Length: 305
Image 1 (spheres, rainbow, N blue to C red):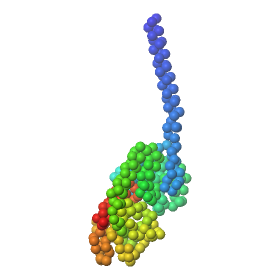
Image 2 (image 1 turned 120 degrees about the vertical axis):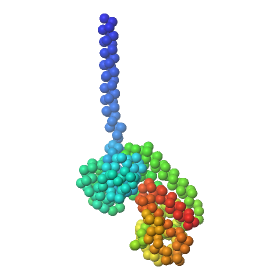
Image 3 (image 1 turned 135 degrees about the vertical axis):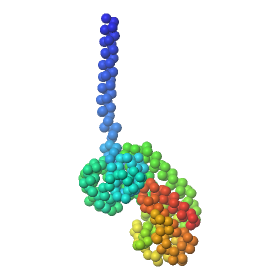
Image 4 (image 1 turned 90 degrees about the vertical axis):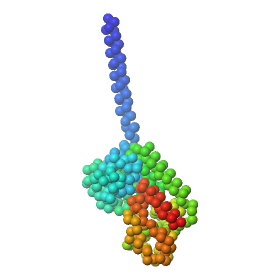
């Protein structure tokens, strides 16, 4: 009799535990929609970008947008990329779906991304509208200031659900920029000609992010007052500006882009041998590696100083 009573008590305890477990499971299931509440951020054009849950399938269309997503902690979520996106190394194994000028919309649709991070330049509004009609949230990245780079990382991190990692990376980049400014901006002003290409001869004006980088390094962009973002100029304009240093982005040290100036000994930069070729991957792409490019630029400007 006693054994039967003990057995009944044990069964009642088991039923109670089972009911508690079912109640807990039901409670968790009710909370799930709130755990993945929709998240919204503004992109660089002021558009509101909303994801209903953390983005797990991401397509990037420009090299710097891939680097931003990776910096935000989402490298393993990129399922499609634009051409010329080769960094970090994992990028080489990701399928290409076109570039900013021509996107394979059908292939994008097949990848079923829940977020696209793109660059506005070269991309038509028609293409952007097509992507949005597919129901894909589109974040447009167009950094115009150095601070925009860590800001992009932080906002993309919110869309990925990786905010702790993204915020930490953004803070690290901001600290590096502060340190560079503290170290290099207090010296004498150095006049800088930043050469984008030599044939034809192009430079950048004061509204470009590179001009801010020059200023952070204690330099002044000799063509900052030009009205066009990337104006074409002539040799006479450079001779008239007479910069202290000429900086050109080239993979090869002493490229033809700088050798071109050797015959113009009237230029102060040429006479004093202040012609510097810097890595284009670090300076031509407004992503997290640009901070390393700024450091290299500051070192070149310091030599001229």
